[in-house]
Image 1 (cartoon, helix red, strand yellow):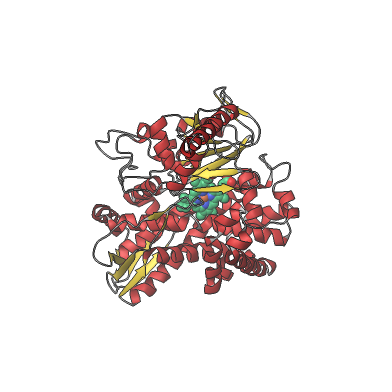
Image 2 (cartoon, rainbow, N blue to C red):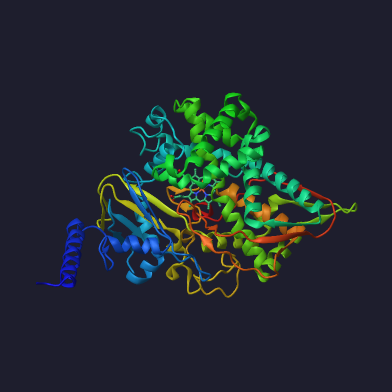
Amino acid sequence: MPSLLLLSIGAIAATYAFLRALVLLRHDPREPTTVVGSIPFVSPLIGMLVGGGALLCTHEVCFSLAFTRARRSGPLTISVANRDKYRLPIYTLRVPGPPIYVVNSLQTIQRIDRHISTVAFSPIQAQACENAFAVSKTGMAKVADDKRLSNDGYLRSFPRSTAAGTSPGPGLNGLSRVAVSDFAASMDRLASSGRARVKLFDWVRHEIFAATTDAVYGAHNPFRQAENERAWFQYESGILVLLMGLFPSVIARQSLRARDTLVSVLSRYFQSNQFLEGSLFVQLRQKHDVAFGLDMDDSVHIEIGQVAAGVVNTAPSAFWMVWQVFSDATVLADCQKEVAQLVQTGPDGVCSIDLSQVRTHCPLLVSTWQEVLRFHGISVSARIVQEDTSVDDQYLLKKGGVVLMPNAVIHSDESLWGPTAREFNHKRFLNTEKGRSHRHPAAAFRGFGGGHVLCPGRHFASTEVLALVALLLARFNVLPIGGEWTEPEKHNAMDRAFPLLKKDVEVEMISKSDQKWHVSFSDDASGINIVAEDLK
Ligand code: HEM
């Protein structure tokens, strides 16, 4: 009689052969090469889970977004490991559900981007509207109608309709001026106590949240009330579960409750027309909703998505910028020197700074910001294949498939960035750096996306972060409690463009002097031109 051991080995071998055959059967030879791993279907999943990744399954799509713990040496992800192992420009991962196509090469990303109607971003936005922002069925029929993939549908025309609200010129100046005045007031308060001990991530997140919502919503910003800010972060903490639609009423109850609070405070704000005293940006958003026939209730639900777009990525990116500038003595000295040149001290001892100048007069600070976006960024652009699509007759992407384009892969590609791709170099983006052995192509920088899906908030987010850091540099010494800067362990959440922290960093902020400050932001037409599309 065969032993139990032999029976088990036989069963494992049969299962293995079955799964392998299934992978082969499901693979169309025109699709990108399938990366099977040692156990078909299971290995990609285990790799992702061990790597700290996450699996997102919904009724219609299954995204596997994977991130290894980022290491000091660079933005390593499991996608980076697969890129290095298989050296394929694009490959297929077979997990339960539709195929996942992971893109490793910039050229292939650019070729796929030409198929924006069939390899589309809008189904992902529509899913967020439905699951995370709870837009009603009637509202969804307007947001994701039969025009959802076309240029004049609600989703794809949104960036065009609202562009003036965030583009260089009056829209951007208006937003930036309010944000800068908030930073100035906050730092006056901080300086009045001489020195303060703060949790750095919490502090940066609050500063960005308060400044961004004040800038957008104006004098009647409902998020000025501390309980509404708390409700926001309660909601934000569960946003991934809501997006996934995985038993949110069980797993993310508090987040759902917080969303109700946000809906009611935003409803009051819009119904009483307070948005008419807000930014051009919020007014254009409202106009866009009205043009598509959305009622006030759905418009308010969608507004939750607008708050998310404005703060979810800016806050952690601002933290990594502050951390990178203050924890590295060379970066600190270089940036401090640039910012010091913007400060003028009047005969009365009042220090003045015009923060609109950080964009034009501080190339090192701007280069550091760009390098932070490159080095620490973990954004993954995702698209859903709407119909079988042949990419230049070379790769077939099958209907229902999910295309993932992880920035960390492109941002650590030595063929684009040279041999120092995995090092942090705050001078990398300087145009004038002497003795540079390698110049990257402009399109290799994808910190704000690229091609058809380009972040419309890039100028505002960049202005905010640079202004916050410049003011900190000018007014404070920031010292780690315990005397040593240690890079905090990263928590790579799949719904973020930047890692969160497993544990906050405690610092002491010490005011450099008791002088008074006059902080301004003068009108000018500059943006922060760091993406290829703005450099053209
Ligand atoms: C540092 C902060 C930010 C980062 C790193 C960031 C990053 C990105 C990236 C990488 C994309 C492209 C996504 C893709 O390809 O799938 C994107 C799109 C987008 N971002 Fe941002 N973003 C930031 C701040 C903002 C702000 C402040 C706003 C709004 C004020 C905003 C609004 C949007 C919108 C609406 C889109 C979708 C554009 C479209 O539909 O074509 N983002 N962002």
